[in-house]
Image (cartoon, rainbow over all chains, first blue to last red; front, top):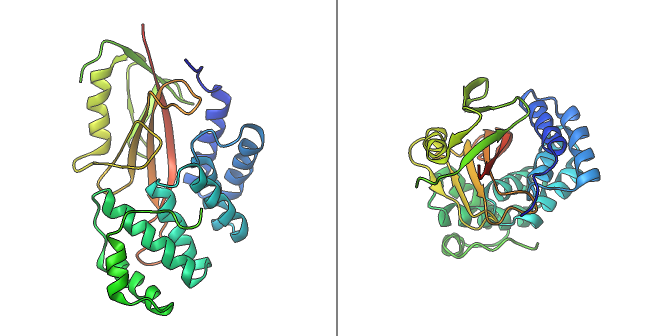
Length: 151
Length: 114
């Protein structure tokens, strides 16, 4: 049986989350970068995900993208990770990227028994139309099985 | 399901797990039977919690509003000892209709056979 993670690792991660709660993103970023450097992401992508949140709030968008993708490579079906990356791409990605990941995120919501708001559905339709996808095709694809795009 | 094992709560603040919301703490005993923890888990998630598929955990449950989740990593514990994660999330609200969540709490619970 594996041993407990050293408490220092968990404590550092919880310190970073405490900073995030207080919106002290630079402090959280510094801790999270140290965790990744010294221990790697021992929380199945959650540490990279939190690091991406910090980078995004600090305006470091290229780093945020890499951190979000690192999280997704560890757990591509995590709805929190997929939803976050889709929303990030809405603000900082190409129309095609946003469409692909928002579609994937909605597929995951539906697979997990969730409900997609009309606003979110409409945003996806608009994104699809902007890249030449018909609303009929987008609607049909929403009910397809979730596949993480391009990981 | 009742199991004859005990658990201890490993946190940065001793045997305390924040389960009612940020800033409001509920205190577990240091050692507690698993069925008691199961009741606390359901209190933590609230009504309407759903199972999340496609994660690496043995089981992941999420509250109806997505602000709380629990992961059972008892068999597939990704290099750690078997444990349970209690997680809390806040809406990022970076644009109208933004549905994404930022993790703000992640507590580890390690079951231990007495």
